[in-house]
Amino acid sequence: MKMKFPERRTTYLMQRKAQAWAEQVNFNHHLRSVIDSADPHELINLLYQGLTHHLEALKEALTRFEPARKMLHTTKALFCVNELRLSLRYELYPQLVKNLNLLYEYLTRQIAWMLLQPMSPDFCREALRRLDEMDALLQPLVDSWLRLTEGAKAQGLGQQPGAGA
Image 1 (cartoon, rainbow, N blue to C red):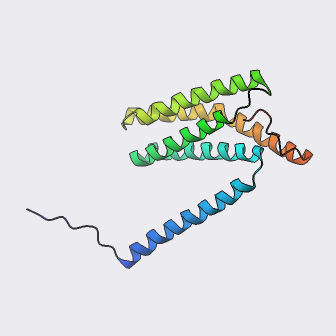
Image 2 (cartoon, rainbow, N blue to C red; image 1 turned 120 degrees about the vertical axis):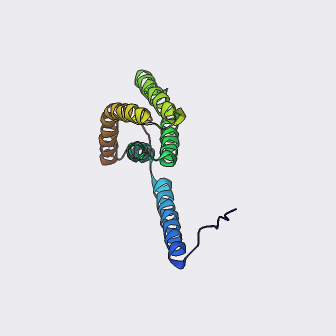
Image 3 (spheres, helix red, strand yellow; image 1 turned 30 degrees about the vertical axis):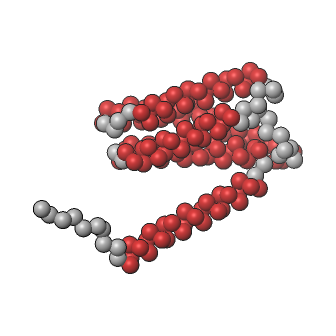
């Protein structure tokens, strides 16, 4: 019977892991300070940036056939969409919010489908097609919200987030 030895922890590997951890911690501290000082418009922008980032990372994970990264970025993208849905303010613009909610519901279904499917070449092709479709639906909204945020900042209206997303 052959014994399996654990991975040898060289000083170099330990330093690399510590550096990666420190970079992540510093990034988290930076992100926390950005979130703490952000107005409601900027918070929605951060959610949109997070969503687009995770969808792009999901595309990369599918292209490289990496199941663990697929799960990570799929769940984080799903979290971003759910937070965007929670930010909707129905009392301000009911018809706009209804349409946004339908879009977010569609995105949630597409992302959840990707989360539940096992990795296979056919799945990756279909998932990449769906991600391109989601990107085409999401990009005009992200660009519009960014312009709205910049306009609100120019007028000094950073306290009310409008339709909420």
